[in-house]
Structures are given as structure tokens and as C-alpha cells.
Amino acid sequence: MKLIGTTVALAVLPLLAACGGPDEAATVPRAEPAEASSMDIGEHVVHFNAQLTGQLPPEIARLYSIVRSNNRAMLNVSVIDKSTRSSIPAAVTVKTVNLTGQLKTVNMRRINEQEAIYYIGETPVANQETLIFDISVTPDGLTTPSELRFKRQFFTDQ
Image (tube, rainbow, N blue to C red):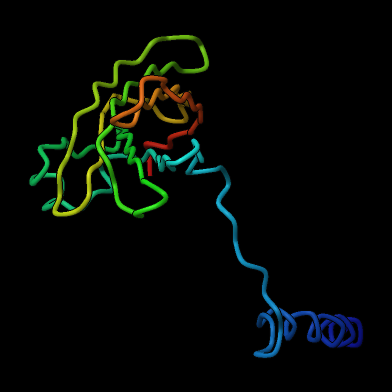
């Protein structure tokens, strides 16, 4: 029995040694986001993301009157002019539904912060709820909106 235990230990030892990760010369692929977080709309790029407001630092939430909670999602949208690489004003509207088709209200408001302009909106979410965001963006000076869609699942019991 002792011989079997020693044999198993010796067989497993090289496997455990390999768990230390790649050596310094190894090429490690760059991680890509699970979903797109920007969209090219001609002369502009729209950046968007959604997260739980409970993940925001308290001072940031206070500064922008955002209710911090793991049961509230916040959508953040910004529009960048490709030629100047600066954020620009835009009309941003959002229609949001969950997978059962329930409409979720997300009223967007503009935030001006030094050189940056972005639009945020909040909505309640349940644990493991997936929201589909249909965002309409019309950069200032244009009359035709660009439409984009993305979905995000939220885990509120973290």
C-alpha cells in the first residue's frame, strides 16, 4: 500500500509543478472583453457599459447623485469624435427590456466632467437578470440616429 501511495505521489508531483503558470519567456494571449463595449458610427465612436451601482466608490456615487446598490444597474454612454478624439454632446435615449420582455425604465442624464461628456441612467435589477439595452445616439449636428444593442447579465448577490 505504501508503494502505491509513493507511486501516485511521484506521478502527481510533475503535474503540480506545472501549475505554477507560464515561465517568463512564454507568450500569454491578451484577454478580450466578453462583449463589445464600443461601436463605430461613422465619424464617431460610441462607448457603452453597464455595471451595478454598488461597485462605484461612495464618493463618486455621492458626487453624481447615484444610489449605490447591488440591486441597481447603471448604464454609461459616451460619444467620441474620431477626428478630435474628444467627447461630444449627443441625444441619447435607451429602451431596456429583460429576457421576459418586461420594459425597464432608464432615464439618461448628461454628465459634464472637465473635458468629458457622458450620459448615465439607472434601473433596478434582480439577481441573474439579463437586460437588453437598445441605445439610440444622435451626435450634435446630425439628424439621423445610430442604433446599437447590447445585453448584460447582472449578479446581485455578490
